[in-house]
Length: 252
Image 1 (cartoon, rainbow, N blue to C red):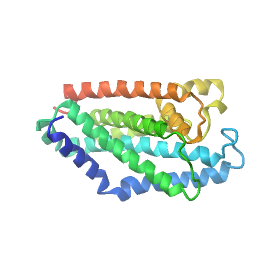
Image 2 (tube, rainbow, N blue to C red; image 1 turned 45 degrees about the vertical axis):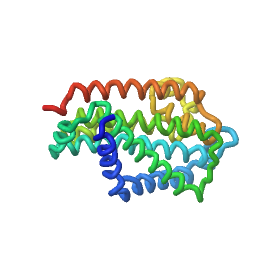
Image 3 (cartoon, rainbow, N blue to C red; image 1 turned 90 degrees about the horizontal axis):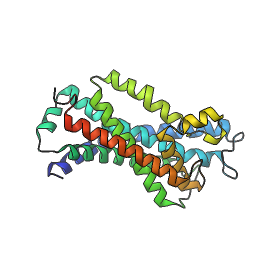
């Protein structure tokens, strides 16, 4: 790592922290509203896992969904803003390697995801207190899931030339994959076709494994989920580094 790495990392962390009311408090409030609405509508009618209340099933999924979306938002918004305002040139002219750029953007995205996730759990603790019997699984899936979306956000930020392109990427790819990843339901309750489709979604494995850390129950073995989520993270990281090294849409 070069000396510029901690400077860029601090810049990216402070970028979201200085507007934390928007970047942290708003997604926490959204998750709380989802919990109140869905638990009121479905808690008496749905049992995702035997012996587990629906609200207990729902909270880890909502927390991870918020983490994934905010990890993506952090990297993608930073890059598109830098490209549109033109200050990306100052980052590219600095003695930062592609690895430095990738690590700084990614770690800042993970930091925002972790802060948002912690905020969700603190906000709902008075409603649904959850123990953490498997903290190592929690850490593994929190970092892997945030890493997947952080890397995907860098790719989206590099690819997009304007905000509506980035919005399309988020609305037509990230949002559907997030909502269809078993946040509000157990994938085992779906028809065979949709079960198979869900198992092609890497977001599902991050959410399912994260839920296992709290409930000790999941639709897929946590080891299999971690392996698949890690493979997705490695593939996206490789692609991101290739794009950063080539200067694609950054050095025009």
